Image 1: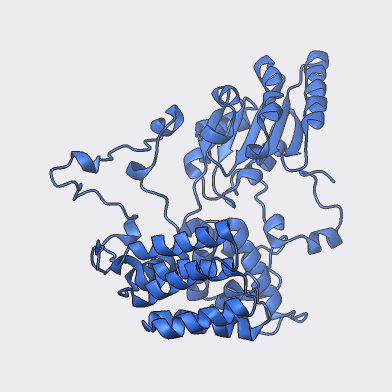
Image 2: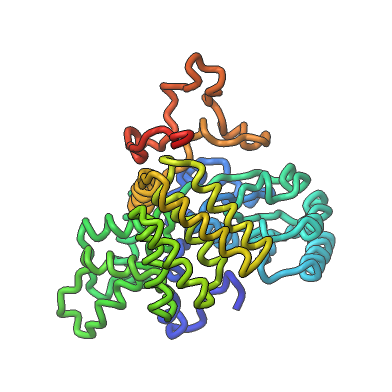
Length: 430
């Protein structure tokens, strides 16, 4: 079965993931990219009138790139061929290019070629499209999560129109989830499942603008509720269930060997408590027992940032130098370099302000929607990016009277006013 075929049976449909079953079947069902596909918009008109030229669909995962290609396959009267850049090579490309040329020459019919993850194609593979694009034998639709300015050949890019798909907003995400709950044909409408507003909001936050993630989470939640053949039980997705499923998205990885972790914990906590004697003792215990010296070196580097930080910026350099010394001269000669670093770190002034700042910033990044980088902070090395207002309004700090553009915000809107780092400026020397 090809990428754009319908499921062959009800059994196949039942085992198809919810995100796949709920793909929009018409442009009117397509949610979240109204700026591109609302009635009357140029891209929609080109699709409906079968006058589409080569395009690149650029956007984050789950924003509808492949879905849009499927809709084009339904609407267009052209021959439609789908490629995956992960699975296809130059041989397959040349074969399809030859068939496209022959089809247009023989019956005057164009080929629409959809290339998923086009950024994975190398230069030679992308170059193979050019002659047929220029001749008009194919209309290329490339989908990519990467910046096409860097990942798509300039020659191919100049012959294509780039459409930027945005991460889906909260309203669009809620609409997609509710549609899946209510749809009796393809979704969960016959299962009597409901979801509270708080659980829905949590699901939307977790998905972070990715419809596929939201629907996969909804699918897992429905499975966790169990089946109800008679449809009599009240089945509601709770905030607790969503949190549990989201937390278990990735399995934790754990090694055996408790003593290994006990010893490195003792070293770390002794240095934190400024106990040089205990620090060098636990270091020796580990090295003499045959511990990997580079593992210890990595932990010292971590400690230099986590527990010393900007109270003594030189600490990180000392730790990295110890790592380099061990790597350069090996063991046992490298043991004194590690001991020197451990003692230095134990005696250094301590500050966890960097560690706390990063932890709070990471929490904000994980628990709240990942907003796009403000346009004025984006780099704009290409004409395409400049045309999209990348870098517009940026002020060069070195040109400001005090070296700071005080009224230029560098945080996204939801984070404005946050103070993650609450320490002091670096102490050049104790």
